[in-house]
Image (cartoon, rainbow, N blue to C red; front, side, top):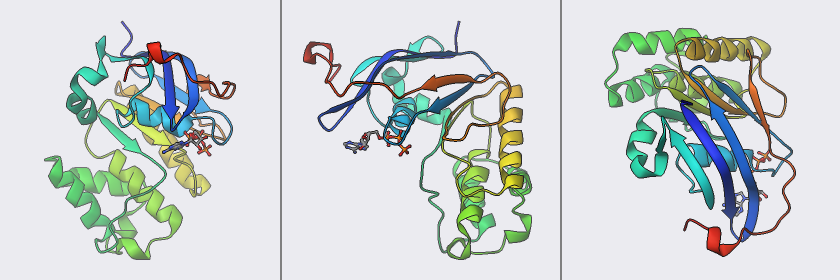
Length: 216
Ligand SMILES: Nc1ncnc2c1ncn2[C@@H]1O[C@H](COP(=O)(O)OP(=O)(O)OP(=O)(O)O)[C@@H](O)[C@H]1O
């Protein structure tokens, strides 16, 4: 049975249909790349997958169970990184990660591992407000890797990263998948990884679904 599966997903924002009829099926270790031009709906789909935006139509199931039936359980098993880094300006890099690690009851070794993974150890004592754009992105990505959850949802995660950091991110995603995790990544430029499934969101007419079909 697929672990994460969508069928006939459709999304409406405001009074516009953003996409419709989207399907995917991911097994353990799966990688889903979301592609499409600006405004196609990649971020909207990621928000749907994160349980932050309710689809207008369709089904989204984790392990055979509709995620909307237990949204709390779904949120517990995923990390979502949107366009913002949500770096706390007054906390140092290490304190920021320690805050999230404490919230999730994780040992301090997890923080050290996350710092090293994104080459942040030398920046550990620097406050968030003094970080460059790429450094903030690395901190936000390090936060994603804290603790083990099965689903990573990343919205254009390579924006602002230098080549070495893209490589580190690719390595983190590869290890996550080898450990049985899944990732869905919105991207304009592709993402290095074995056997990705590509979902192109680009060709939907701006028509609303039949109101009879709307879930809510
Ligand atoms: N809160 C909102 N209310 C109404 N419409 C919205 C809202 N947020 C986004 N949209 C619209 O939904 C459409 C899809 O936006 P979305 O951000 O999902 O696209 P995207 O593919 O991620 O774009 P980009 O490549 O520019 O990041 C756009 O036309 C956008 O204007």
